[in-house]
Length: 303
Image (tube, rainbow, N blue to C red; front, side, top):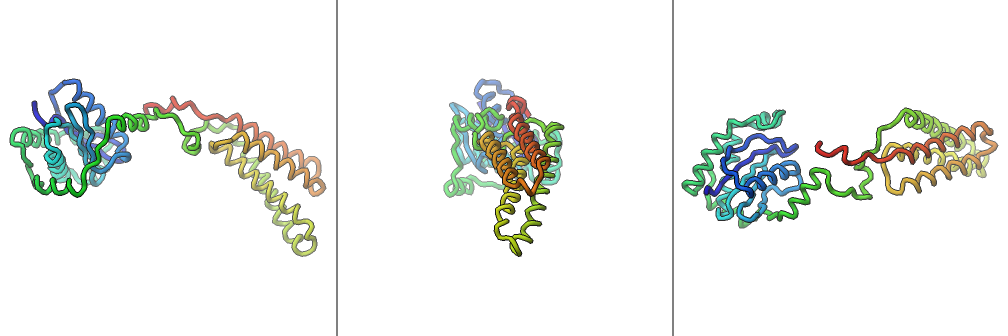
């Protein structure tokens, strides 16, 4: 049985497969390792630049450099230094054939399948002669591994990463900004417009009162506070409608209560119809905020 069984070249930023070796081995563990390579390729930003995933008989080795990751499945009896020699040789060959611009512009999977011939030649070199093929020497790699040993990843960590990459982990309650709300509705857009209008009116009246308050009537400072506080609450209502937040119900009800109290306090500076308008807009916004739910996470699976 050959010691180097499979090689895989992937673009780091999005996990796009660039090239892979053709293999004729069909044992169960190799198929599992190849599936794990696909899992790793979807979340390369969670993996170190150089790592090892140990299995029962077969190990995965990987290095990432200049936006490309090189991965291989090898028999555990192959020395670690030789496995990384193979990956370094693979990197030298790939960068000599394809520049970074071609890699960045690749739009479909396996755009460099012709590189398979080079991979097969390198595999044959290592499997038959057991030594590096190009610029890299075994002594250099051994010294580098002593100074910067690769990170060893367990299969349990790989399974956890698989869940994270495919959206199967339970959502964390505190990560509200990363959760997707249902689409904005037409009534929601209308409430946002009205809320922005109310916020603007409160801000304009508050700034206008400041001029007279500090000149003549210091007791009117509380009216300024009420106008500006109502302005802040309107802005917060817009934010709560657009973005998910923890304790949303408590925050929404609290904002509505403050807006109502501020407008009651401003009775006299505003007539009844103006007060009803501001409180109605705040009440409608509250209902729409509470009715806008998170989307079902299963809708995002497989994307």
